[in-house]
View 1 (cartoon, helix red, strand yellow):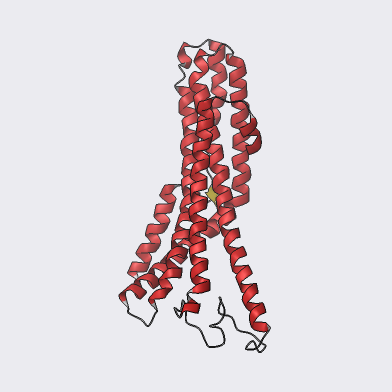
View 2 (view 1 turned 120 degrees about the vertical axis):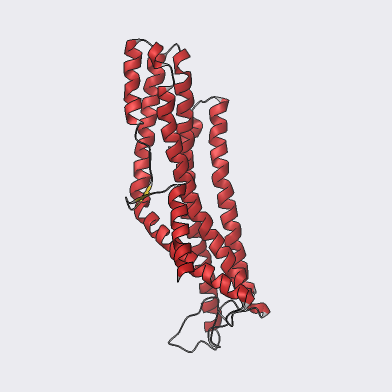
Length: 284
């Protein structure tokens, strides 16, 4: 669908809208991978420089991740094999985590761009000499985008619910650990911050990407309704004005991507989750 949208003939203004939304997604992707790279470099090299990132035993301090083994791992080639496997696994997990979130943002931002282009068409429809044809194409595109949002909603709703829960718990624990290290209340090495800070910022940004994309989707879908209402339908022919009722009735309900059919992914939801867990952390 995205490939077809880019190949279709369009005005320069519509193309610029699509490029602008694609740049937002690309900026989030670049920043997320930069933070993941920062965390990976810290995880790999800082322990080798004598800067511990966690509490570990002598048996596990040589590896990236603390693990207990049922075999003797103190001799070669077990050390090399386990280290390489942990390195590959950590990189794959990071790429999958960032990739799934970035793909969602790319899809929803693309749909938001198409909805904004629909608003432009509706705003110019009153001056068009082919009113019925333009309106037909607009209704078909609008229906196609609604179906695409439904597919994304059914695919991501459970993942989004888990993401919001994970974000709240992770924020609570991460901020507590960061504050503890900074204040020096416990015997923690400050080098932990090199790993904890990018991990928390990346989780914050990924959740923020979901909510920003969802907020843009809601805003642009509401804009379609406003554009249909503002196209001077009172001055149109009765038949043309009657045909506009279809798109006005369908766009009256905003498009949402929800977390488990419970919470709409908007900036209001993001702020509520972040503030509530922050207050919970401070209270306890």
